[in-house]
Figure 1: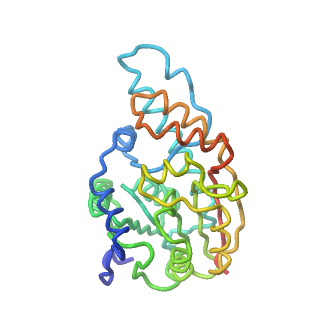
Figure 2 (figure 1 turned 60 degrees about the vertical axis):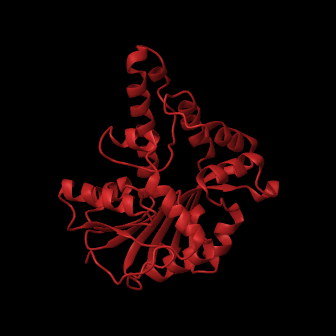
Length: 285
């Protein structure tokens, strides 16, 4: 794998430029402090039942206990996603689309021993992740690139697997899956974990609109994923509803010192049924 490719523009629109600016400035403790627990910096949420005892005990150490538990839940989410990537061998190349600070990319390399390319529109995230790769001694196999995931410039058919972990809401799905389909080899696997609004309920609810405004994103309808996949030779092999599995994470976070103010909107959206948290795995045919 080479760590340099032909230069492609990272921001194809004013909106994408604003997304890059947002993540270049972002330094939220709920991302940074969780990553400092064990050096795996994620930019996604968690699943599973928390150990609620972390909310009890000495107030002086409450932040440390709750932070570690939130990080355990987000790491569990990443492990679930990676477990759906299929049979990956050390000779394969895979891509983390919207890689953030690289936590899942490092987990993937450790799990499969393969080449990993992480792609982010944020220069700050890419520099951070590449420094992490250097410190871990894996920069010969794990590399991060400031690229637009809609037009990466990587070679057609070069990827055995690609994933988006809570990053599809920053893109047009038709454009995203067209690029993923181009990059995946035949029989390759695509996986996403994402929040999507339930179009059975109509248009996005007030809580979903609040989430959109907070993260300057555009949450897609559930049906949009399957339409765009079908149009781009991506055939779903698994659809897992993680809504109930992620609610405890949000309830713990709402009681934590790392609260950001968006927690109640997520809880309202999920409990109302208007918002869902899905894992979708699909094969490139």
